[in-house]
Length: 305
Image (cartoon, rainbow, N blue to C red; front, side):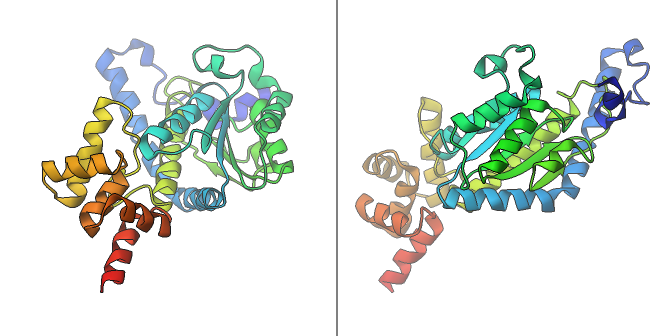
């Protein structure tokens, strides 16, 4: 294992931070920031591959499939974070995007010794979640060789799912079990092997791109507004009403009325106001256009002409 680790980009000592233990706080942070600024350039070059992954996720969602992130440690936590943000932000069912971590949810806050070293646990998680040919499974590991992740990817492939790898090293074992691998090679870490830093940041950015793009593509966004959010607390109720206002330019009184009549469903309220229809007709228009607000408004305009 030592020999293998010594060959990984993520496990190399950084040549520019050899004396970081002798620097002031500001100097340390400058070094960290300099390295962080390189991440987006690396990701920009990967956009065609990331877009390919997003297209497969969109296809899965349209066919009733699900997206699973599978990781250990930091990678697992980042997957769970992205998955957990989808229901409040885009009104998705919690089963639609799921994050799995080696050791289970206890591992979100503490290390579970040995969990990431078991391919069998990864296989077991795929079986327990009923992975099938409609689903997309993304294995995430900075090294590209975490046994739990590889076991899950291998089993997901056997079950017919689309399998994608996300790692921070070239030519990793992930390639054996993935349809393709997103290799975000961001170089050695400021602190050798601390892959929660640049590697973790690159993973978070890529997952943001994947789910945001997929949600836009399936009609969860109108203009640049998240019109399918779940207004589950006071802040989100305020945000929902503001989104309706921004989308329609309607008065506060009309927005309040539409929001109430739409049963707090933002898309319905927007279509009500822009297509000048009641809540029932707005809901029908949205159903007939697979939930796309712009298409629902255009459909009403076409019917009325």
